[in-house]
Length: 390
Image (cartoon, rainbow, N blue to C red):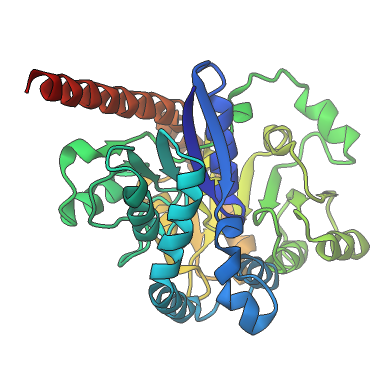
């Protein structure tokens, strides 16, 4: 069996989603054994952030998202990178120790920040096992975020990321573009539903324009502002709120009520279903949620300002470049943005542009990894034959 390690962590949820989606897409590769590896567990012995604050760094990150405490996150990133540099040698030691006990045939990183340590730890164990980084953001946020100058492969979901890799001197043969971000295979499954009947079943109007509001798996208090602003506006719209694991947020929305119908859901694996019932998407410019919405042909409305996470700011620019939605500086303007979105000519253009993207990244990534493995095996066979000849 070919052992393939898929590294993720739970900061924000997008990294785990990409890893699990990739594993599902690998199901037909009978000779492959994909192994999900939570990088947090690997580094637990030196989680200095938890020693100082009493909470792990990924739990701190998720709390920041829930509370919308993202102003100044760029400075926090500088501190994080300083801590990573200070503990680099210990990180490499732990990584080496793990892979000596659990040798892989291919390593796929779906996490930022630690790719230099992962590469060095792997190279202590093996000089030939391929190391691949799949960017789960539409672009890098250098320095030392996703792309490192080292002998490895990069899978990039946008033209911008490809150009960034080239600019850092990465050889063309080590850069593999895809048509977008990894999205769960179930978003591609055909579903035949009666939208009007299903809306009525949820207590919604079968005819009103329907927006889906979602801020990742941990929700955000920004959802309350969106609900309040749209309720105060004269916009004829109803909303589906996906609150993730934020139970307080879900309860607050249910208690609040509003002028127009609404449906409130907590954490769910049925996001594709709710997107099928919706006409457009409102949320933060996370690469995963934007990609899911656009795959379901939902135009998007996202916010970009000083509170936007640094690594997600380009995502908002990309929305404008591709003309698949609207970017607001503040959700205080959400009523006006929704009215603009629903102008028939605008909505038709955004929806057509979303359909043209044709994101097949999850399938493309499996094919790219297959080629990398084949090249690795061929290089090993060639090396062996040369050695025998000598």
